[in-house]
Each structure stands twice: as C-alpha cells, then as structure tokens.
Image (tube, rainbow, N blue to C red; front, side, top):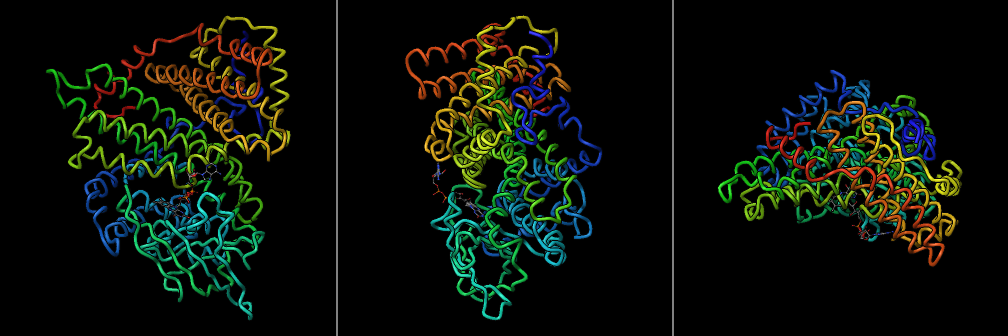
Length: 598
Ligand SMILES: Cc1cc2nc3c(=O)[nH]c(=O)nc-3n(C[C@H](O)[C@H](O)[C@H](O)COP(=O)(O)OP(=O)(O)OC[C@H]3O[C@@H](n4cnc5c(N)ncnc54)[C@H](O)[C@@H]3O)c2cc1C
C-alpha cells in the first residue's frame, strides 16, 4: 500500500466532508503542545486557583446551605482573574481571549467538583446565549454584570415533562395587549445555579405554538417567578439545582433573546459549546482523579509491596492514562477547529451565528460522550484501586465517583448525544455532503481487488492503516444502513443500530485525533498510548460493524459483507501489538512520576 493511501486519513479520503467531522486536509491539528504563552499562563493561574482555593474547600462547598456564599465568593474571585469571561470581548468586560484559551481554563476547572459545575453553568450556558445571540443593548446591559461576578446566570430549558424532548416544553409566553412585555407561565426543573442566580435564560413557546419557540431573559425577583426547593442529589452536592415556577411573570419585550421561532435553536446550539467544554472539563477531572489513584496505589501496601506494583492495578492505571490522553487529543483538536470558525464569525448575524455554533455539533456530541464516559471509567477504577477505603467517605474516591455520574446525564444524556452525532452525520451524508453510500460501493470494489500488505517506513504507519480501516468499516456498515433505511423516519426507529454506528464514530474520531497528535509530537509513551487505543478501537469497531451487518443481512449477502470486514481488519492481525508490555510501560512511568505526566 502506498504512502498516499495511508495518509488519506489526513488528506480527507473517503471521509472528507467540508466542515463536518474533522478529518482535515492538513495533518496539523491543535494540541496542548501548541499552547501559546498566554494559554500556558491561563492554565497555570487556573491551576493555582483550583489547588489553593477550591480543592481545600470541597467539603465546605458541599455543605453550604442557603445563600451559596462559598460558591458565589469563589465565582467573584475568578471573575477578578478574568475567568468568568475568558472569551468575552473586552468591550463587555471580558478578557477578550480566544475560545481555545477558554477551553484550557475549562479543562483545569474540571477538577473543581461541585464548584466547577456552578462555574460552567454560569460562564457557559448561563452567559453564552446572551454572548452569542443577544442584541447590542442586551450584551451591554447583562454581560458586564455576569462577567464581573456581580450577577450569576442560569439556563432554564428542562421541564418536568420535557427533558430530552425539549420540543415538548410547555412554558408559554404571551405578548401583553400593549406589546411592551411578554407574560410567562410554566414550570422548569433541575436548573443549575437557580438557588443563587440573578438571571435566567428561559425557553418558552409564544402563544404555546410549537413553531414559535423563544428564549427570554428573566431577572430574579420578577413578580410571579419563584425558585423551588433544592434537589437532594447523588453527587455535586455543593451545586444548586432547583425547579422554577413562573406564574404571570412579566418580562420586558426587549428581553426576548434572538428571534421568535428560533428559541429551540438557541438552546441546542448553545449546548454544542457546553458539550465541548464538558469534554474539556471531564478530561481535567479525569487527570485529577488519575493523580489520586496513583498517589494511593504507591502508598498502599499489600503482600509487602505497593499495590501499584500488581499487574492488574498497573493495567487500570495505564488504561486511565490512555483514556485521558486520547480524549484530550480530540478535545483540543476540536477546540482548534471551533476557534478557526469563531474567528471567521462576527456574531452579529443570527443565521451566521447559528451556523458557526452548529458547524462542529457532531464533534461536540462525540466529546460530551467520550469525556463523560472516560471520567466515569477513571472514577470507578479509582474506587477499585482504593479497595474498601474507596467506598468510605474518608477518601475522596467516593466523592469523585458520585460527582462524575452527572456528566453522562446533563447537557443532553449520552443516549441523546449519541443520536445527535450519528443522525447529523447521516443527514449530512443524505444531503450529499458525505458520499457515504457511494463510498461504501467504491470500497467494495477496492476490497475485491485486495491490497498490498506493505506499510511505509513511517512512525505509527500501522496505526494509520488501522484508522483507515476503521473508517472503511464504518462506510461499509453505515452505507448499508443508509441503503436499507433511506428515509430519516425509518433510520430513527433503528436506535440499537444507530448506537453502534455512533460508537464507531466516537472510536474513529478519538483514534484519529490521538494518532495525528502523536505523529507530530509523540514520544515513546504517546506512541504506546496510540498503539493501545487504536488496536482496541479497531477490534471494537470490527465487532460493532459485524453486529450492524448481522442485523441487516443474512445468508450469502451477510457472508459477503463479513468477508469485506475481514479484509479491512487484516491490518489488525498483521500488526498486532502486545498490549501488556505497552500498559506496563505507561503505568511504570505514571508510578515513577506519581502524577499524570503528559
Ligand atoms: C444536576 C442536574 C443539573 C441540571 N442542570 C440543568 C440546567 O441548568 N438547565 C436545564 O435546562 N436542565 C438541566 N438539567 C436537566 C438535564 O439536562 C436533563 O435531566 C436531561 O436532559 C435528561 O432529561 P430527563 O431527566 O427528563 O430524562 P428523560 O428525558 O426522561 O430520559 C430518561 C431516559 O430515557 C432516555 N431517552 C429519552 N429520550 C430518548 C430517545 N429519544 N432515545 C433514546 N433514549 C432516550 C434518556 O437518555 C434517559 O436515559 C440538569 C439535570 C440535573 C440532574
């Protein structure tokens, strides 16, 4: 096989879709190794704050009652450091830094447990709708207050009967007879920061008409607006989560955000950025918990040696590092792409703003799922590394596990995000932006011809070949799904199949992101990480593709498809790496440094 063929993972190849799922024409992707001096400084400052001001107060944050004084105080403190408006323009009181810097800060703050949730809800979904969609007057009035920490923001979309199905939200807005205000009636539930927030972005429907969804800025204290009792939660206990009740709440007409009929788009597209930031925050949380795991594992002795020296514990530690590093690679790759898109957008035109926020919605959904599941894995294995002590409240491991769980639920559950990723992908394919079915057919012919087995003498050449193979397996399975269910209504009824395709997408995106990063910046450990991840991902992808095809086909047709998969999976057998030695290498380095070291 030629070098060009191998490199088609980065030159677009079959999978190139303009502006869609990554796979950029250039191999150069944004990575932590490319942080600017300014970004490095932001990371250092944020780290110092988390270590000095938040981590020692985790218990105090969880136990605060009433006014959330500790949380609000810490929000004010980071406001002074410029971290409530990292990427907000200076004219509105922000720091005027770029989106990628805001992502770096999000990653570091991820370690801050409940406080980090309050910070993210405020500076993300509580502020972003106004930053992205506000009129000049709304931005001037509200952003300086939010960015300075004088006010705290919240985002009210979910309702008791409309969680995943936000289209089903019933909160109603009616224009007053004099046209000066909207009257809001309805109920919201699970609203982060609501116990202390001053400003709420509320999703409603004008006249209850599903075609007239709209967002409104509602200020605390508006007559008829009440915040209900705090939820008693499994984790993130120091964050505020309450229901809201709106009875004839009068909102000035100028507090309509964006356009009537576009409220749901404001919510969903603001969430895209929230999901990407959640990917960064869970990456940071994951690294933080890895530090906890290795610290304990080297100190705790059984059978006369530290438990870190046992192979099964090393395996866990290595897998944690692999998950965190691969997720981080995809997070910053996406941050770089979003950053480019944002630079080319002035956020003055509604349609253009929506377009900018929507461009990488597939990647944002992927990272929400990948980050939250990596963090959950790390937090769970950390409890295991701690043994019985991990199950007690004397150690932080149990808190980390409880705090980690919510990430798979909010910002859209992982089921919804899996659907978002794959349905958008298939929709783009259906619109001809991605020639999935055509590529599948072309591939079939190529596979019949067979391919040469020789790999170029390049770093990670076998892994590049495997990533190509994963993409092709996706084409074979996804292309066949599109042929069998060409209409959206038919595809959406095949959720188990969509889940499998979505998992293939997640594996591909992370595998390719880590590969591209390691090719440019990788040392021995990074290469070991990529080898391990890509091999597992390719095996899992083959299994998922087989399951999809087994559902779609039978008899000779199934055999023929399985034959194609087998040919695509050939590089797996030809280039099998020894996972045990690689895991030991990674774990030994972690044990030697006693903290996440990459
Ligand atoms: C601590 C916390 C903080 C939150 N903060 C906010 C906030 O600040 N603002 C806000 O607006 N909301 C917030 N939420 C709400 C959160 O976003 C929702 O809980 C979440 O979107 C899921 O909605 P639901 O709880 O009604 O679950 P449901 O929608 O009832 O889902 C139940 C189960 O069914 C699955 N499911 C639902 N629909 C489908 C489908 N079509 N296909 C496959 N599976 C499906 C779900 O994945 C889930 O597993 C918060 C929630 C919590 C717990």
